[in-house]
Image (cartoon, rainbow, N blue to C red; front, top):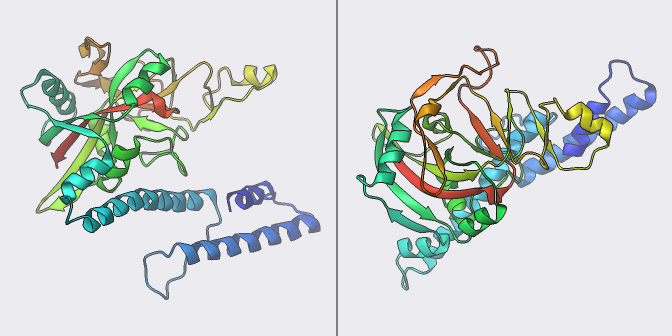
Length: 330
């Protein structure tokens, strides 16, 4: 369907020859056919008499790709729950799920120095949030994978997620979007999106409603940013192809292209940032931006548009290791 939609865009000129009109007609027929086949395989919620929208543009296609991504995430959780139910006589459901996730959890003491740093990091942008628990996370092989990249600029950064995706993320790790860029947005192409402001990632969290509160979870990850390409809020793509010299010259100052041979990450520059004077560096070299939010003096964009806060995007899963899981109410 994506290929057909791209052909439709190519044939979108106002004046058309008879052959072009005929080709466009065939394209429309293909779109209707593929849309019908998709809805047959993936039924949508709604009333039986409602008219289903035709997937006839890229935005509509991306919306359905997001639906499929969510279904894939839920499939893993569903299989684990079925397995826990089937093995009730042999093992408790909680132990079964813990072993299936294959991820080490350690509940942290609130008075630990690391916990205090994390709380300060949170409260710099959300001082009234109710933090219930912080867990230290260790996933198999993530440390070794991160070290092998041998990149500089390691930061602790936030990643917000839905509770329905949490089991899948803890099991598989954070992945570069398989179908769509990422649940947290796609302004800068397919990648893993993180932020240095808790409030920024909070917008992508959804949890379980309990009375008047919602219990949610947030990931705090060590991200090896390497060489960072700073850009404004323009839509971008990535490339690792060998372009000719002319193409490279055109792309040098073009924020729409990221050369993955020169840069390992992208930073979408926001207008409000943590005060860099209060960024600390741990003994292991990891930086934590603990400062209160201040106006970014170097923000070159329109203050009525663009990004409110910084976004960091990496395009390789080996650059990210999940370090902490924060459980909170809002």
